[in-house]
Length: 356
Image (cartoon, rainbow, N blue to C red):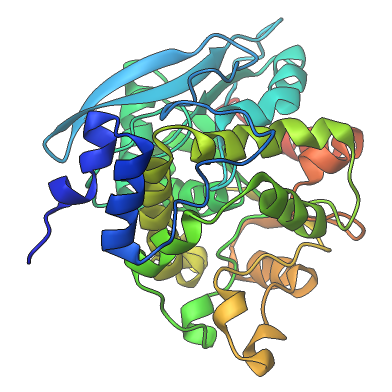
């Protein structure tokens, strides 16, 4: 029997019963039950993060992409006392526009207008059942959004996966990028070329279905915060886990699998030498993020995620780069130590001459 994509997402279309959920999951993956469906104590959010409140009003940019009518959610926060500059904040794979809450507040206080989109496939934006995800496509979507807002020149700042996207944006639209800021960007190395085996999208999907709040919290504690934990971090765990726990969790998991494939197969590190814009690298050296390292051999795994080395390598490869390192911080310095991080950010932003 040949199963179509419509068959695969029959449950998402008809808001199925628990019994049908088990049946569909068993057919496709041989699972005993959808593991994310009943995480005790975890909030349940909708496909587009309905039920989770953002710190600022959410706008909607409607676009036609790949024969589909889609919505791109975004925040557009004006400056308290405008300095004429706009910063576009690009979230990571396990993050959303809301995760930039503290940075948005500080940037707008300093005079910057802030645009923070949720990319297609993430958070409060559309979750297509089929989409050719690429950093080129997401950069094009982001540029269309900025054009609709009549923004000609922006500083683009990307965290984690958003760093890969921000790099691609700067490569595609250098004339519209006054500065590039990479905050613990993943993709500072090519995991596939280093020996990490490829994993099919179906296998990635199977793994996504097993996500739980506990697993997300444990990963974030070890990777984002260097073993530390504070109650304020739980908000971001619940934000992510709640999408998986909701009734559309399978569609969320499928989009996460598709974007994981994009991240693994579309390295941008080999093009760092082509960047034509001033670039600020902000690196927590205790970060150890490396996509797929769990399926690599032990000898390969030891070479991956060395941000104390990767930051220096990236700075050497990018023609006009400044590197700022935080020796004791992990993957999310802007959340872990916001005062110290933003002091360095504002010093770096001030180095760019925007008077021409």
